[in-house]
Image 1 (cartoon, rainbow, N blue to C red):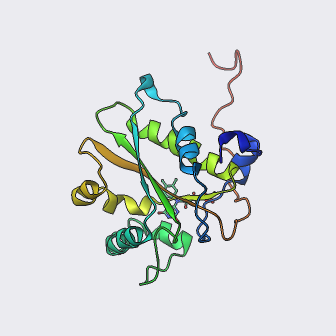
Image 2: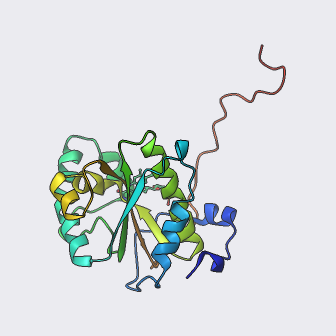
Length: 201
Ligand SMILES: Cc1cc2nc3c(=O)[nH]c(=O)nc-3n(C[C@H](O)[C@H](O)[C@H](O)COP(=O)(O)O)c2cc1C
């Protein structure tokens, strides 16, 4: 699959994109990950810092292991009320079978070089490019922020080949959607001011 095969307009992809939490077992086509990364690195980057680097995990056993390690940490956070709202929102059952990666076949980690200014902003812009490109390619995706505490543990970073100066910013699962949620609602944009020439001294 190449970016040239994308038929959805950018605006259509922006409106259609949803967080997908159910995936088929169909593997990504050869080249799909490269197309997604190519889209990611086209993001704007402050002072042309390009602070990003990527880890691609397509090993279900490893993903399950990371998920199992993340769950007790999530439960602790819920206990301290940090994630309660979010978890209620997704109605996530944090039981034995629950996989925080929703059994997707691919997890892409966008890592940021913390020595480069504005690495966080740049990596999130890359994340948005990646998930919109995925949508346009007929793929589902979901950002898995709940995996961040475990992914950034020093021993996990070492295992995943992430150097010290990098931090995981955006974990994103990608795969073929089993069920594509309908477009989601949003509040209307809150406009604090609408300033035209001469309306402010
Ligand atoms: C920073 C961030 C972290 C997120 N973490 C999770 C997560 O851990 N698990 C999950 O299922 N969805 C996660 N999401 C997805 C949001 O829940 C989702 O974007 C939101 O509910 C709006 O739904 P939509 O993306 O389908 O429009 C995350 C989104 C963002 C931006």
